[in-house]
Length: 238
Image 1 (tube, rainbow, N blue to C red):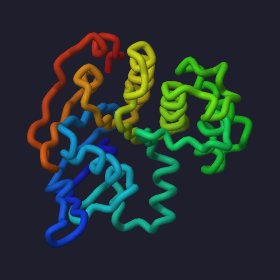
Image 2: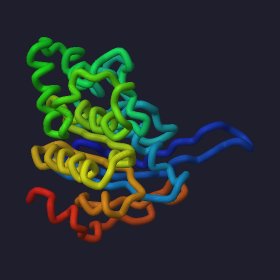
Image 3: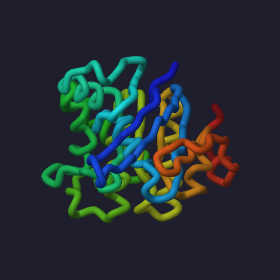
């Protein structure tokens, strides 16, 4: 089943001489169980594509469908509910809540969606432990290193029953060992049926993907299978 579909999506910022075409007629699909990497030079529209796919921004033209449902027909509350229940998002700047512990940050989306506190916290702890952060569960974000905060953000994105995982440079703040742990978790989520989109400039990270979409000047210029790397050999069989 297709979990994400972009149909001729364009995004224009500003108008007149200041008009910027961030995306131009971009079409792509992501199926459940599939991991897609999006690559391209700075300013090619990678992050804009991700925020539109995650319903955080609306396209100027075109359609976005998540799980077959057209986002444009949803109210603001319905879009927020869709993000909370179905979409896991890993931001470049982590977006962790400073007043909550690592475990509370991870379990918060589940509790907001109605899961009782105890099972929500248990699910959050399991996700943290998978990323080697079980001992840091009670720490606040300002007590964590940049790499640890990144792993908390990953855990928050994959906890629960998400259908779509969107990640913007998810291993950017990590060393190679922790970067591998993050990609293992993302691949494991896809192996269980989640559709994933990872924006990256790193060819080694892209080697974990089933397909690579290349953007330039806001347009899709190519789609291809990645060049196999050592990381792809460690990915689970599909």
